[in-house]
Length: 582
Ligand SMILES: [Zn+2]
Image (cartoon, rainbow, N blue to C red):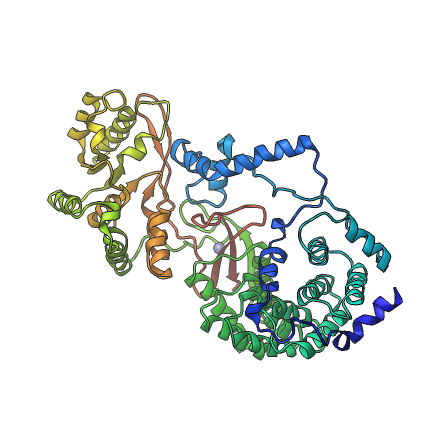
């Protein structure tokens, strides 16, 4: 064992004849290994023993997972909304939990059972272990992968390396070395990281991104942290470094009190069009605490505006960092509180009214034009509808007065599976007509012919109370819904259970997507419940926008709670209120 330990420091000499040497990044499959395995360890083999009974249960779960997507889609189509807001953080998860079929998520399948060594082994013991190994892969590669995955101790890994080196004339393959590096970084063994770094520098002209990333992270806490920037430069020759690479370099610079370098790297990251990790932004706030530096403060406020412009929300601990920084600014007397916003749009803590959800006239026109172009025409009208039908619809809409509410008839009618479709739709239409609303019901031609689910008398009543447009049965409803709503003007709302995510994705740029999402939150009506007879309850549309905002002497910052899972189309419900005390 003593040989094993001391051998590591003379690796460069030992590995002079490695067949991997001098190869460029594209030739190594370690990159693949790192991408697929280390960063997503759940894809690995599980080492736990699985009883036949468990295996059966697992197979069942796997089958369930396969249906998960479909089940969720079904849940969206057939389960009524519950009381939490359509776009509130966690609402989608609650909705999906209401459907028992999507409750269980399957664990990754376990394919192998093998006992990993928990102490350093000598050569004979490694030989024995290799003999016992039944897998098809190379034992050395397989075991080093497993050890990386299970975070084996450095000593055990070292004994493996020494055994491999002894069997191969002192040669240890590149990928085994990288897995060892991974363990050194994971266990924060900085001096070992530097040893491997020295070996790699001597042995290879270039590395692949996985090794670069590990070295950059491993060097971060060391005296040689500046060398991480050289590695970043090397990476840039072949690719754009990841947000994590930048995060490591920036945090390294801040750790060593070099704020200028940290900001320069941050600018560079933005220039590459990479969106930074929220951890990176948090690090700037943590570093800025108790600092009397107006220039630095200004940059932090710019970071908050960056969050605003990109509709990003800090996590809980980041929100705490922001609060702590504000309260630490000398002489400004900021006071922060974690709070909620009242239905009226007023902050519960300070009473300030939050920004309205309504789009300005300019924003509205901009969005309308984009949607007409990108979603409805989309360069490929035939996918969604035929040009003839679209023309027929356009002239129909133009012949009607502006609508107040556009209803996705098919979608609304199917909201309550136990009720007859035409009855549900009639209930909705009648209730809204009583409120003097100009309605448009979008439907399909088959709604006029299927007598059992779509009763003729009820359909006639609907047509008397609302304008109706029945599209071909093969057409997609959503483009019609969007067109009619936007054409009617900023006041017009729409009812569908569909979350229109596909259309958001069709939109060309982030700005338009944000405006679309804001418009959707301000204009989409959701039905919460229906009582037989007619009484239908709509969910209230929030009057305020959930976005980072400031009035100069106040900041309101929505944030994500750690324990609430929020989908991309939901917004947080918790706020950080910051107010300057006078
Ligand atoms: Zn407030």
